[in-house]
Amino acid sequence: MSHGVTTRQDPGTGGSARPDLIRAVPVRHPWRWVGAAVLLVLVALLAQSLVTNENYRWDTVAKYLLDARVIAGVGWTLLLTVLSMVIAIILAITLALMRQSDNPLFRWVSWVWVWFFRGTPVYTQLVFWGLVATLYPTIALGVPFGPDLFAVNTSDLVGNYFWPATIGLALNESAYLAEIFRAGLKSVDSGQAEAAEALGMRKSAIMRRIILPQAMRVIVPPTGNETIGMLKTTSLVLAVPFTLDLTFSTNAIANRIYLPIPLLIVAALWYLLITSILMVGQYYIERHYGRGVDADSPAPVRVQPAGHRTPADDAETTDARTLSGEGNLPGNRGAGGDGR
Image (cartoon, rainbow, N blue to C red; front, top):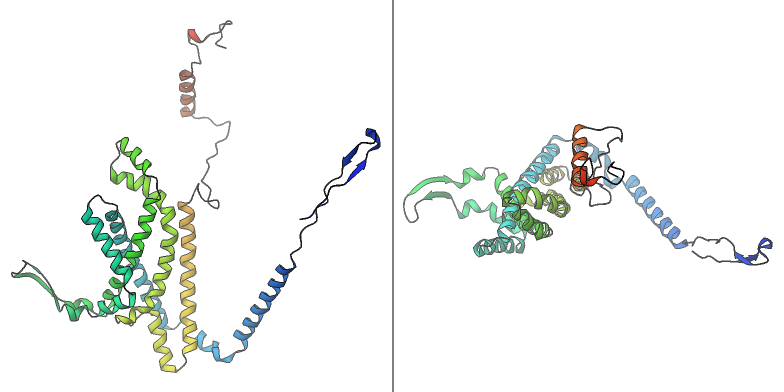
């Protein structure tokens, strides 16, 4: 913004010079308008392509968008996402606490877990869990090198491969969430835990009431991203093989009618809808735990009318005056004898 200062003679002050008001000229940004125009043209071309290109087959998209098999695939995908994230969160909290333990064995086990499941591809892990019945035909519990007390056939547990897919996704995700939770716990100043211990609080209460509420502000955003990532990672459960999720359902329909593009659009629209709902939920959770810290989520303020007084307020006022030396104490009276 360019500006200048000019002076003029004021007759009322004997000819002394005084400055005029600054004439501010806004700085022009022509390239911003050029960039906006280019973007508008590109968006218009994309919209024209989506409307006029018959290869998208929007009639087929509308036909199968609410198909029973697609809706069932959405349900299985949501179930996979929710169960996998719940198991992963429980494991991640345990691993994060083990990583901060004073026991070196706990720290070593937690580190090896994270190293292994972060270091191998999730597709490879899902293939392994699909072959677990081949590796272990039966799972037995008993005395080592002795008789079995309990045995179960692994093929009966596998069923339609839902649980191997869920466990495979959860174990892989737990390694990433463990590091997120560990970062959140370390973001809280250790002096707060020490002060709480000095007050006699138990470690469980310190973790629940002091550390976790503050750590959640750091934990929630990446955990929300991981949840959205888990939703899309469920498309890989074909490696198990689990064949009831959204991606497999739409691919099966596409292979039957020989129209892959419309069914890919159907799957993409459902994924976008679920992701949008998850993002809205993540926003409100972040806003809840960021109260008083983030600019867009201020802490609630309780305003009490000035004329409204309660017995508790009167008691507090009386106690405050007593502690400060005010009142009808003999030593607090001035020369006038009225306590001033």
